[in-house]
Length: 404
Image 1: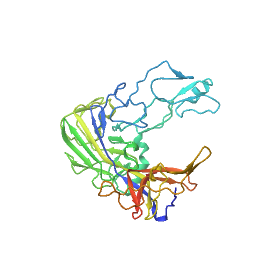
Image 2 (image 1 turned 30 degrees about the vertical axis):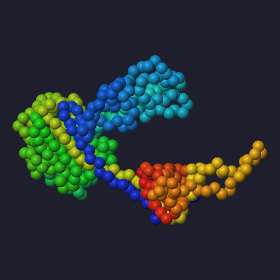
Image 3 (image 1 turned 135 degrees about the vertical axis):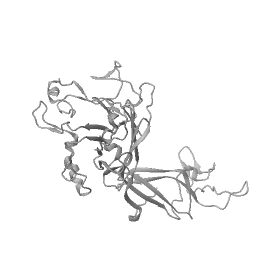
Image 4 (image 1 turned 120 degrees about the horizontal axis):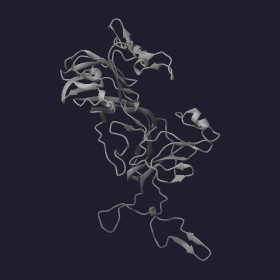
C-alpha cells in the first residue's frame, strides 16, 4: 500500500465562524426555544425531562422515568435514570456541591450521589424596583449579599468607551442602576457561543396579541433603542454582547392596559417587565414576548488535500483485480501448491459489442482514504459516497475537512 506525505500547500488550518440564529418566545410562564414544542415520550413527558425553553446540556435521560427498580450494581441502586455517584474511599474524590461535613460523616464504602440529570440551561429574568437592595453588607448567616446587577458594575463601566450610556452611575444621565427600575435578562453562553452578534438583537413586546413595542441594537454599540411604540427613538436598555445580559431600563407605558407583572399588583406594559413571566411564578396572561439574536460560534477546522496523480494508484491487491481462471496455478500436489508468478489483470473496459471488451486499460476504484500519523498509525478514514474510477490518465484531488 503506497503512502504519500501531505505537502506544505495541502494542509490548511482555519477557524470557521458562524452566526446561528436564536429565538425565544415567552408566554404565560413558559419559554420556547427556536419554536421547539414539548414532545411526549413513551415513558416521560416531556421526553427530555425538561420543557421546550431549556437545553439539555448532555442529552441524558431521554424518555426515562425516575423510580426505584429494585436492582443494583453493588451498592449503587438503579433509579431508572442516569445519575452521577462516587463511592467514599481514601482518594477523597467528591462532588463540588457536596457538603464537607456530610462527606466526613459518611462511612467508607457508602455511595454519594450528585444532582440528577438532566442538567439544563435557559434564559432568566430578574426585576429590580427602586427599593430592591443591590448589595447588603450586614452580617448574615451566609455573609453579605451582592445582586447580579451590582456584580456587573465593573463590566458595565468597562464599555463606557463605546457609548456613554454604559455607566452604572452617571451624573450626566442623571441616574444610577442602584436607584431606578431595572429588568435584567440573563442569556447563558450555550445559546450564543463566544458573543452575541452585534446588530442582531430584536425584542418584541406583545399585549393581548398586539405588538406594542420593538427594541433593537440598531447602532451595533450595545445600546437598545425602541424602534416601535410609544417610546420610539429612545434608549430603553443596554446589551452586554460578550457576557450575555440585557439591562432594560425603559419605564414608558407601552399600552394603557394592565397585567400582573408583579406579585403585589398590576401595571402597564413597560420594557422593564420584558420576559417577566419566564420564571413561571409570574404568568402575566395578557403579555407575550419574542427575543431574537444571532450568536457567534468559532470552530477550528483542518482542510487536507489528498492527490492521486496520473500514473499512480492503478494497481490493487484485491483478488477481484485479477482475471479468474481454473489455471491460476502452475502445479499442485500433496507436498506443494505453486501459483503462477504472472497473473493477467481483469479487463473491465466496456465495449459497444456484447462479447468482446474494449482495449485493455488498468482501472481501479478509490473508495477510502486513510490518514496516518508520522509513525504510520491510522488515525482517520475518509470515505467517498460512490467509488471513484481511477485510470492511468486521470488525476484526482480529494478535499478532506476535519473539525477540531
